[in-house]
Image (cartoon, rainbow, N blue to C red; front, side, top):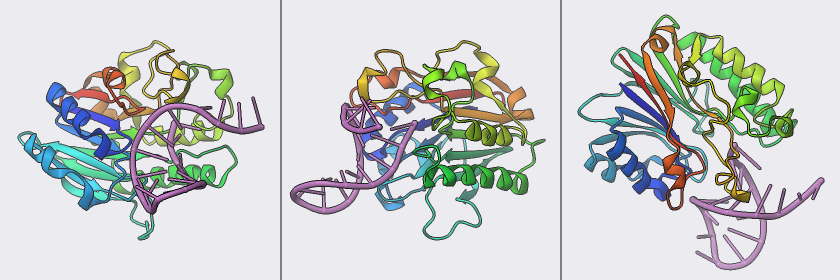
Length: 259
DNA sequence: ATGGCAGGTACGACCTGA
């Protein structure tokens, strides 16, 4: 099973790029983040024509997550949109579904804005809620995969200038500790099963030619529970789409699982 | 210390991202 995750920074703007990615990679399922549309505004017909069914948890202007599910491979069952205690006004940042034996969770973790800000507190709280919900809803002895834009870089080798980011948002100690607590639910970072090098990134700021200069962060992740991690034969960041015209600032991450 | 680029909203200037 080929699983991908991609923060597209608007599905309407990135529709053709996502279609090109589907045509090239033929993933079985893709977790999208920052679709920035309500469910009814998602360009579903174009993806259906390409053989993929969108399963959407949308929101106007900000956030929004979705799966694209290859019709001839998988069907989404037991779809979950948001945390069980989310109110009607909640930000659309989580969608989960069962695909056969596999439970797949797709998240757009809050950015946090600035250490010490209200949004930063919201981020840390959201991470704690995620861990608590994982405890309630899933069993780490089963195949569970968590994908998405985590908005946290966990190690120095995932940051182009660790000293500049030290104690700043995306790389602060409380964020890393909250991330570690989620990992301890029972996850392994699929990417680090297959790559040890520093300097492999999934996001580059649009400004200051950061991509051309090779200055990025690895904040988009595919984490797997023990049985899913044991089945992971490859995990790679696809840098090419970041070179395309009008790119997302994030690159897709792709994992192959022998499930 | 700040803004730098990009998308959305709504059509002018601001909010958010990371």
